[in-house]
Amino acid sequence: MDKFNARKKYLQLRGEFSNNQILDLSVKIANNSLNLDIWEYKNYHIFLSIEKNNEVDTNPILNILTAKEKKIIISKSNFEDLSMTNYILDDDVVLELNKYGIPEPMNGQKIKISSIEVVFIPLLCFDKKGNRVGYGKGFYDRFLNELPKKSIKIGLSLFSPEYSILGINKHDVKLDYCITPKKAFSFP
Image (cartoon, rainbow, N blue to C red):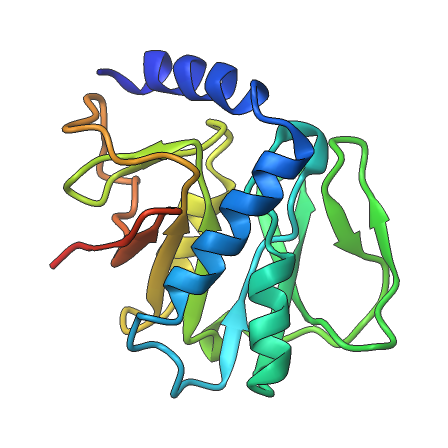
C-alpha cells in the first residue's frame, strides 16, 4: 500500500471509533509501553492528542511519565517553516488549541532538542519495517532528523502494522518501536 492510500484508509478507520473506544485502546497502549526497556531515561517528548482527529489519547502515558517523575516535553508547531519548538510541560504551562485543534503551550521553559532522549510519535499507520505515515506535512520527520541519533523513537498506533508501505523516502525517519493496543513492535 502506498502512503497516500494508507493515509486515506487509516483516517477513515480512525474516524469510526467512539471517544470511549479511543480511551480504551489508549489505555492498552500505555500499559504496553510499560513492557519496553525505556524507563531509565529522564527527558520524554510526547505529543498532545488532537481529539477531533481521534488520535491516540496520550493522557494515560502522561500519567505514567508523571508517576515516574520524568521530565515531560511538548511542542509548539510553526506552520510557516514546519518546525517545532519544544517546552517543558509543568504546572505553570498554559495550553490552548491552535487552529488545527492541537493543544500547544502558550508559555513555558524552552528546552533544546539535544536533551530529548525518548519521543512518542503520532502516526496514522506503520509497517513491519518501522516506517510510519503521518498527516503528510513533515513536521515530525524534520523534528526526528534533528534529534540525537541515540534518541528512542516510539510510534503510537491504534492499528496493527501494514506489511509494507510504499513511497518511503530518504527524509522519512524509521521508528525504533511502535506500540499498539495488542503489543509493542521493535524494529532493529
